[in-house]
Image (cartoon, rainbow, N blue to C red; front, side, top):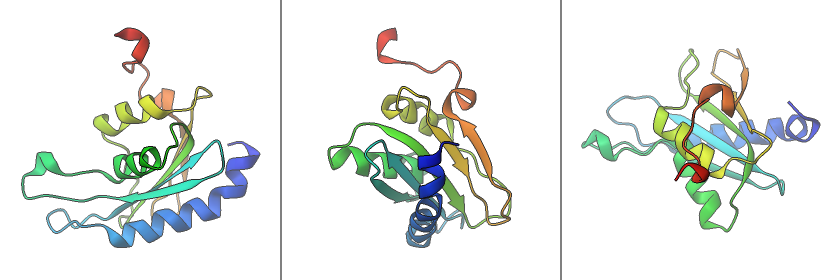
Length: 137
């Protein structure tokens, strides 16, 4: 993890934990919070929002990225995920693909910070090695 992200880690974790508390998860009871860090040093949060029609559920990662985009930012360098579970929760396939659309070219970090404290740091390319990119269309 680079120095800039290390310096922002505590703030990323705080934002993700704050958003985790806002989650709407009456079905799974799993609250997830996400925080994205842009190259400009801005942080945006998101939480999971479930729906009785499960396909309409929004994951925390996509909510955070969509909030980032709605404010005019288009690239992130790191995303941190946390949940009210002891085990690590990884982004679903849909979230991984959405991340690639707004990923900084330097291959952003995906930080998994479960309640257990066993933090994992991955590069997005290792989580989705064969993503669909705009050049593929």
